[in-house]
Amino acid sequence: MNLSDSKKKLALAGVVCGLVAAALAYFGNPANMAICIACFVRDTAGALGMHQAAVVQYARPETVGIVLGAFLISIATKEYRSTGGSSPMTRFVLGMVIMIGSLVFLGCPLRMVIRMSAGDLNAYVALIGFVAGIATGAYALKKGFSLGRAHETNAMSGAVLSAMMVVILALAVGTTLLISSKEGPGSMHAPIIIALIGGLIFGAFAQKSRMCFAGSIRDVILMKNFDLLTVIAGLFVVMLIYNIATGNFHASFVGQPIAHTEHIWNILGMYAVGLAAVLAGGCPLRQLVLAGQGSSDAGVTVLGLFAGAAVCHNFGLASSGEGTTPAGRIACILCILVLLVIAFVGNKRKS
Amino acid sequence: MKEVDARGLSCPEPLMMTAAILKETKEPVKVLVSEPHQKTNIEKYAKDHGKKAVTIEKDSEFEIVIE
Image (tube, rainbow over all chains, first blue to last red; front, side):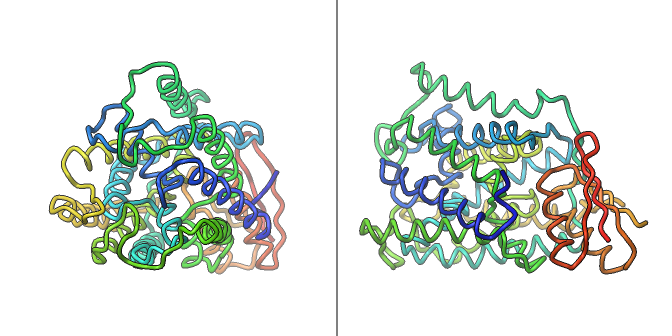
């Protein structure tokens, strides 16, 4: 099965993922969030007690499902490769930065598109920053940026993150050890079985279509290639139809669920996410998928996302519907400076 | 034959390296990559640019000859 060899199949994969996102929103996930990777990793980090923000703690079965969906489909279609060793610590930092930027804006690139499909104009403003960040990353790549080669590792190594996800799911379903929000976004969720199946389908289709929100725009800038953008367009159209049909479409800046209107920080937050995602070789969704198909480097980036979520909520960096925080604004600037160092100092491709 | 060794590199480096060498030379080019999606991308790039790509799978890696 190859979904990436024609634009029609790519668009179809986007439509399937859009239907999953719409179904999850319908069955109880928070408004305009549906299947936001940053939000759901943050919620899962909270469930594990990595942060104590009471309203965003819940082990999201979607996160587990995406990793396992990618793992299973890559095994089934012989695309599983256990690899690692391409600047793992730099990738950890990139993961942290992706989460910090996402929580300044309030959403990963996937949620940005979902917010756009619901008429949230702040997300369109953030898109400017996201594209600018990707363009900066593309410029760094043209100048020879590289995190170096990954090498084949023992087959078991690439399956560790998938195994950890199974353990999280088992703890969530079979014990009371994990924390679950009583109110707020963390308390709003689709039934576990629907969320898990949704995640599995999403992960499998994302793996076969190479869906990547940063990669789609990066490929347009670098290669004039619109293939990956076709997947995102498919998802956007389905969510747009869903939002209009259910009365959730409201074109405005104010009054959008779990969003703020500080334009400069929406731009800078997503600038950091776009740049970090290009340097790491993919958006948060793509990192989960690559980790599922055996990349320990992507696995380390995912651990960086978890650590970033803990930092955001333990030190007051995360924004809320009220707006950004002083600490969040300082962290966002520092993150961009760190990214520029990673992009332009030291990480050169070796011939 | 010119060779591009892009094994183990993250996207989009293999494709960028291939595009750069195809601009430089009209000779056949051999490209080595590790990941199946990178193989697909290189094959598609070659086809889109009017070239023929023949791929051999070696162990878990791919050798693509573009001419």
